[in-house]
Image 1 (cartoon, rainbow, N blue to C red):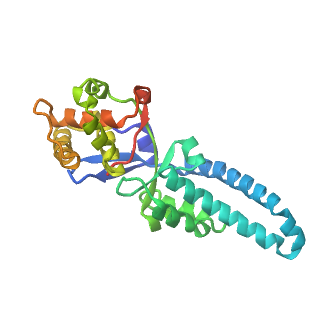
Image 2: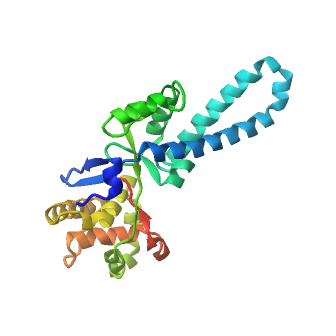
Image 3: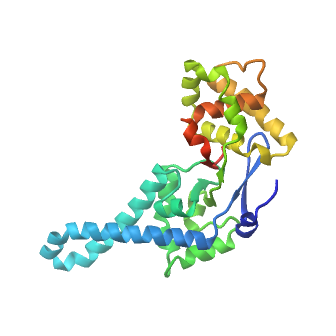
Length: 265
C-alpha cells in the first residue's frame, strides 16, 4: 500500500479488521482542523447573536443578568451545534465538511451521539488558556493527533478522500440479481457498519495486496450470506458477490460518479 504525500505529512491511523486486513486513514493536521474550527466558530457566533437578539427583551428587563445569559447561550449553542451536527452528519460539522474532515472512532466506524457528546463536552478544557492551546499541545504529543476530548471519546479526526467508484461495481450492476426485489430489500436493511465495510472494501480493493484482498473478500462473502440469509450464486466469486451488494447499496447511477472514502468496521 503506497503512501500519498498527505499521508506522509499528516500521519496515518491504521485499523485492523477482524480478517487481519489493514486499512489506513490519513489523520487531519492541526492547520486544517484549526481552519474548520474557525468556520464553525463564526457560525456559532452568528447563531448566538441571533438568539441574543431574540432574547433582547429579557436582557433589557434583567440587565444584571445580561452577561451571564450571553455566556450561557453561547456555550449552549456551541455544544449543541457541534454535538447535533457530528451526530447527524456522522462526525462532521459545517467546517469539517468544507475542509474534508471527519471524526471517526479509533476502530474506524462512524461516531454516534455518545462520542460526539463526550468529545465536545471536553472542549472547555481543550480551549485553555486560549485558542485551544491545551488541545493543540495534546494533539501534537499524542500519536494520533488527538486532543483531550478525542482521547476521552476514543475518536480521531481524519481526512476524507474522494474515490471513483470502481468500474467493477458498474459491471456488477448488470447482474440480474439486482432486479430481485427480495435481494435489494435485504441489502437495504444491512446495518450502517456493514454497509460502510462493504463500500470501503469495494472502494479500496485495489490498495490491498492480493493475499489480504482474497482473505478480506472471502470473509465478507461468507458474512454477507449470513446477514442477507441468502446463498451466494455459484457463478459469483466472493469479491464479485460483495461488489454486487455494494452496487445495490448505491441509490442511483448518478451517485456513482464519486463517493468519499468512509470509515470501516
